[in-house]
Image (cartoon, rainbow, N blue to C red; front, side, top):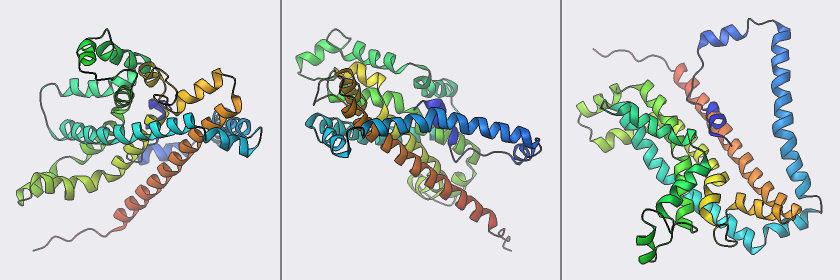
Length: 305
């Protein structure tokens, strides 16, 4: 999943009423043409490939597909994929909240530069990101000899996979929160501080409830990218079967060995994880919209004397 596509469905991005009204003024044939084109692209480039993956995985029957997922190498890839996501996503959560807070709530020199750095992984190829870590931590890298002297393995080991995954996924949460926190301003936080709240109380009882849906959405996107990352992980992993192969890398190895049923069986597991992510995303959007409607339906508070 590319970053530019993944970020377009965020529930914290609002569409103006004027834009919504202008869309209803188009002729009927224009609306139906655009809808048909959209549905055609969805069918041709999304639904049809997904159907092909599951069809090929089940070509020799369900027992064969299940057997491919029960192999030791497949289990190792599954465990490593979830381990990588379990480490990368919480770290990116901490960074995303901190970065969004700094950009949205404070004015300081270098703010624009920090925002540019946050967006850097969106413009750098994942393969280049992997090569950066090889240059830093490889045997001939900047600190590779020191790591070798102390028997610390990063490249062609699990730490390198986690570092590469963190690099390619760390903008997701921050980029969901920054526009949301900028739109909310700092009035509520300042009022809480004036009333005697500590910094932690202000964050927990004021800021966090206001950003919770953007935060959840960013975590969902970050987790999806972490489990599906291929380019950067491929460079730093070494493709060691049973040790440094994640699910995407395991699919590549099986396919290159002409084990098409096993490859598509593992690929179908990744597709199911993607569909589960989509389902969770839809639930989050529905809950966000319901909360927005409930908040809009509340009567305005009357000023007290």
